[in-house]
Length: 510
Image (tube, rainbow, N blue to C red; front, side):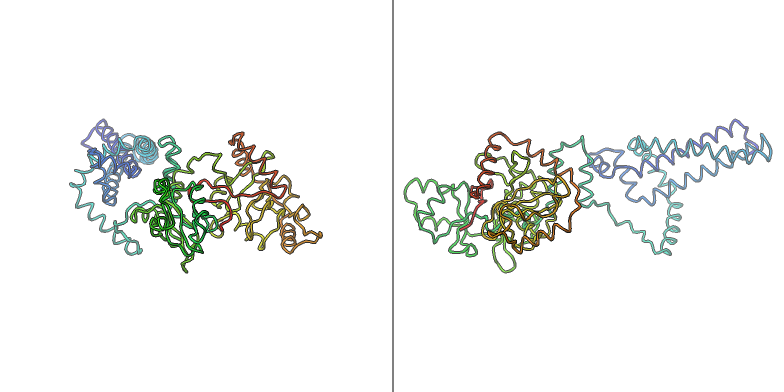
């Protein structure tokens, strides 16, 4: 290089450092691209995105090309810097040139261009693709040799170099992407997308109306009773059975029978002629599959059955849609809520309330793998049937059994624990003992369970959620709650009103 002047050598050195920075920055930009946005732009006809997508189809070739160019210019820059140092300072200048060149390359050819590439990813990547595509064709023989050699070395390490794996997001990863899109997608839309992704993890057992809450017509009843039930029903469809709910005949559309009822020609034979075949759903079916089944079968209602054919509950298309968009609005005067805030800060909760609704409303984390309702959780927790008035702790909340209906807990009062002393089970309250003051086996079990849980911390988030629910209720609901509370204390509380869904009845099934 003695034939070149120092000015030419300095110019070449600066040019090589800039080229090194280009290789480093473009590598970072190309590997940091959002692949899904890149595909979107390429499908839209963006030329830069199309070139870049073509390069990234074989990232191993692209990386080999970039590293070849980057290492070549760095080594050449080192050689030129050494020649310059020898001319200016002699042999001692070699060490000085090495140190200075290291700092210059680190700052101007590595850190700065790579930082810039993370800020201007698409602009740099699309510009670089216009250079790398023709350069890859020119350097293809060298790139191929390098890739073949690297592939053989990786094969010795038992590492596969197949490029058949595609970037696929799991449902959980896609949910994370949706959650991180705050500001781009409205929160309500994000919640709906997340709920759609969760449908695969939820089965029909989790949201079905339990067997005992199904409002249905028994053909063995008198005609007057059937007419009264149809006339007072707010449902659009009703299940029809004979003698036992397991002996289902089908269901009827009540709205399509209005004209017949008004004409006066409505009788038992007419009713039976209007019955449509029942549609059955195997237990454990995911909501995603069932939604598609409803669409394929052109159905809107079905009965969930177990492996023995016994009916477990009822499911409608509306139930699945509510899992996506949330509960539909109903008239609060006609549709009593499962969770009713009380003036003292406690809550009256229906024993048939689903665990998923409790977790969502009260910010609890009860497992839905076992029992699906609050009544089932209570019975599993106590391992016995409690008596009316029994008090115990569950999920760091005080639970008081208000009313029993045969062998199930129909109404409970939930109150946040105030002190650690209240975590123990109270059996001395009204109704917790027998008439003669002796404790029942269930109460003894409660007392023993409370002795093992003396130290309990108050969970702030559920209490905060309770306060939020309480603040959203109007004056009419509070008045209704006070009336229910008084009735419960007098032992006269019942819960036989029609539920919010068209197929639910919160009361005894005959």
